[in-house]
Length: 148
Image (cartoon, rainbow, N blue to C red; front, side, top):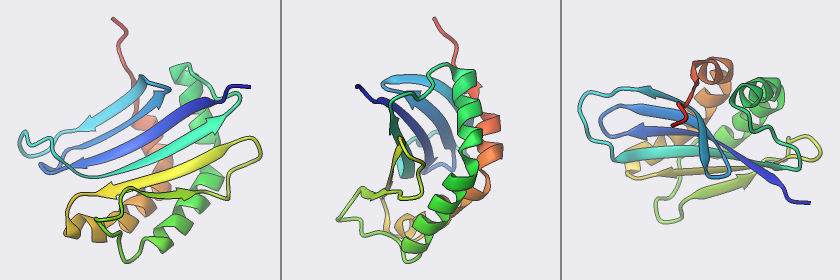
């Protein structure tokens, strides 16, 4: 059976902008952008939550509901990962990838993080922790993308 692939991502740009979104396979479903101070779109860091499972939703509103339903185990998983990343990541060994053991049966969650500069690499654990703590707000801020 083919597994569905759903990716939640959060990206911090050099200009302070932050993009958060969800893709289903290669299609963007939901997104929110917090504008930065200028237009330097170079990434400082990213955090991807890569879900795989046989029946992941693909409708934007169903995806939003499903992600909110996963909050309890995701918060624990992200907290555990943040502890592993407290001292940062090595920029030479990126992306850092962790299979999250807290996922329910039938779901595989791969956490992938990367940071481009030493200062941001030292803060990546905090970014992962904040995603877990702000999960409901982040998911609630996502808007469906207009279909052309």
